[in-house]
Image (cartoon, rainbow over all chains, first blue to last red; front, side, top):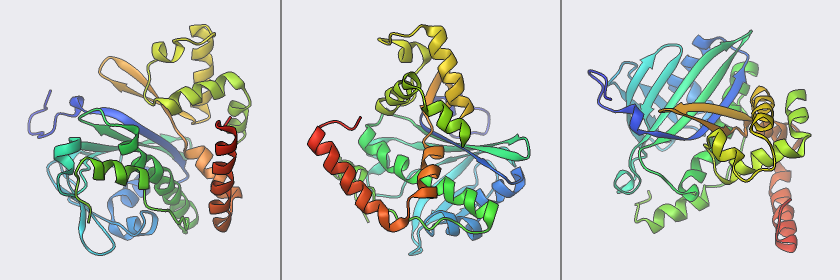
Length: 177
Length: 104
């Protein structure tokens, strides 16, 4: 069901990838790190998160070259516990070929730390080839976020482009920048 | 980290992780299918894997789905593998896989 005022019916999206990490920080600090460019550039391969933090607000992930990698929308905004956003990469034909993607961050207190869970959910069943890109990237992003908040230093992770995902997308006729 | 190693030090639990690696997001019934373990034993192993943060569950409609959470294993890798070693280790892993046609 779509809740009043909510443009996206969350129940239609099936979780496909779920990652959990414990971080020694406050929920507020984790929320800030997830929603601000100043932090995200450090742990998210230089990508800047620009979020208008209200349901229906814009959620943009800007690539280091300044282009809009993701031009999404805030679906659920309950600081500092839960944030759901549409996560559709801005490549020509991508949404038509794959359907839409939702990302949800849940932040729960766990003793002196917090438990952060990232869920990537999809409107349509997708192949492991398509899902491999997120499965390669998210553990590195979340580990780097943890390191940044706990030590002040992100992890310097050099990662090759997600070749398996890119070739699967190319085969589906999705345009690449 | 002790919990992660303890959870991994059991062949049945590694088999459950292998099943989730092959297909993520399974229900308890799907995970039990074809295994020589009782449902109770699988539930117990899953609880240990969940406590070690190697498995995460999410509800989807009426179903409880189990997901492989590789983040703690990734952290173990980051702790002991130096940046310049990664490419060499990947190459060696690929070679072993090709020669053995299996990565057990």
